[in-house]
Each structure stands twice: as C-alpha cells, then as structure tokens.
Length: 405
Image 1 (cartoon, rainbow, N blue to C red):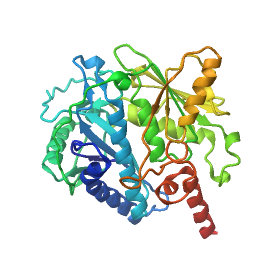
Image 2 (image 1 turned 45 degrees about the vertical axis):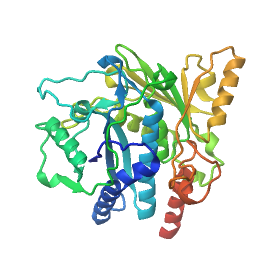
Image 3 (image 1 turned 45 degrees about the horizontal axis):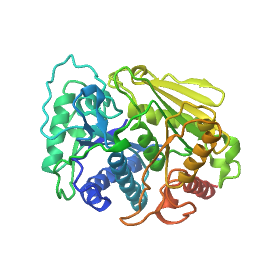
C-alpha cells in the first residue's frame, strides 16, 4: 500500500536551489523512513516502498471551473525539480523507493463545504483539486505531514476532506521536519501564448524500461497537456520501443518485455489520471484492451483514452496518423521532434506542436540527464544521470545477479 507525503505550497522563486531548500529535508526524511521499513521487512528482498508526493498550489487559472488552464512550463519544471531531488536522495542514501509526484490545485485559505454527496467535477485539466484528490487517492499506509505552519495547515485541510472515508489511526500520521520556507507566498502567473493550451491528441515515445523518475516526468508532462474541458475526449498515445529494436542495448537480456513495460506505463498513468472513488473499498481493476503490439484503456469516466503502441522505428505513430497535435520530448530526443515534423511535411500533414520537459539535475547548475530517452546529454555514463538511467538499472541488476551466483 502507498504512503502519502503532502508538501507545503511551492516556494517563490521556483528555482532548483530554492525548491531543494524547501523540499529536500522532508523528502529525505520520508524516503529514508520508508526504506528502513523495507529493510526491516521479512520480505525485504522483494519489497519496494511506494510513495505519493502531493504538491498543493494555485496551478490552475481561469473563471470557469470546467475550462481552467495551467502554466505548463512552470508545472513541469516543478515536477522536474522534485523528481530530481527524489533521485538524488535515493542515490546518495543508496535506497529504492518508488515515488510519484502529483500536483494538486489548491489556494491557501480555501474552505470547502464538506457535504457527503460531493461528486467529481472536471476542471478542464488533468490536475485534481484538493477535494478531488482526497476522494480519489486513498487509503494510505501512512500519512506524512511537514512540521511547518504551511505544512500543518494544508495537512489539516486534507484531514477534514478525508474524514470518514477510511479508518485512520493516529499512529499512521507521521510528522517530518520541514525545509526553509523562504518566501512561501503564492505565485501569480499569466498564461501566455501556447503555455496554457491543451490538446486532443498528445504523443510521447521512449523505451520505458524499468520505469523510473525520468520516465514519470515525461509521462506527467504529456498528461498535463490533455484537453479535458467539458464533453472533450482526449487521447494519450505512448509509443514504446519494440523488443526487436532493443536487442543491441547494453544488458539486453535484462530489458523488460514490451508488454511488461507497456503495463507499467499504463498503471502509472492510471494512478495519475483516473478517478477512483472506490480505492478504499474494492476498486475495479483497470480494464486494459490488449491486441498485438498495443494496449488501450479508458480513464476518468471515458474522457481519456490511453494507447500504448509498439514502435519499430524512430517515428512510430507520429508519421502513420495525421491526427496528432502534440509531441512531448526531452533534451535527448529534441532532434527527433524536428525529424518527425520533417516527415509529416513530406506527407503534407500539419506540424505537431513540440513541448520539451526539463532535464533532471544532479545539483544546482549541473545539466546531466536523468534517464535514457527523456532528456539531457546523451552518453553521460557517470554520476547522477548514469545511476538512474534504464541502462544503469539493468547494470545494477546484472551485478546483483553475479554476486548471487
């Protein structure tokens, strides 16, 4: 069962060094606590702790509830900062905790009518507000609150919203140290140009082998671009490299089969996007339609269709389907986005909008990549980037296997 850490509001300015000062202490405390629990478990060899990190903030803008907008560049940048911190902590502490970061729309001081008949209302984006988050993400093994004024305030609001939804013991609420609050006032941002745009069809691609934080950033960045306004239907196409194309990769025998990688992607997106008001009871299993080289599922009451498709070249469905709006890339795959649009131009098709997620940084000022296929400087085989790439994960498993032999 997952645990939950609710962080205070994002600091201002939203730079890596400021975010790290605010969030690294509580993240370190929670990650090491979960890792220690795994270590002491009788099934420690198989167990991996899972953590949901919720970041509340005024991420959405606009007068109409069903047509809200967000500043995509700032939202994905915040995700990149926090995923970077998680990866650095796990690397430095030599621990493995499966952590996912969720942005939750909330304004400081907002009060809720706690009527028991509440039901989900779409706001036009993939981001839940605090009430929808409380109703869709539960139960948890432990709830971690940050011991700062802002951290305790948001946690108290969350507790009010989940009251009566599941049995919660006082021992499940754990207080952890906070970071430097600095200027924790809310940031007011204008949605400019296409930064607040959302789209009907969003596409990304990668190997997604041994799903890690770099992959999660790319998937989250794509999810933030989905058009979920009233009565809209959005499609998220995830191209996943086919098994044949990976035969010459390092430690190829440890690459997960395509179906395993596709299901891991689907599970992560479902955990990020789906409405599940029965998580505390008997949740309905994710209904995945499986065909040769593809998996399809519908999420959020049918408003989102996720398609995982096998790709056997550098282009995938971007040059076989004209109806594609957006391609989300990284520093490493930036040139691939240009090549895709050149191919589409040859067919007389419209160019896809290209969005690029930030690279995950080892420390402030460094520009190392954090993953294979989703950003940064290709060929970085040492330091932070190498330690959390899919190749490095396979190398770690290979070394462990040799030790056991």
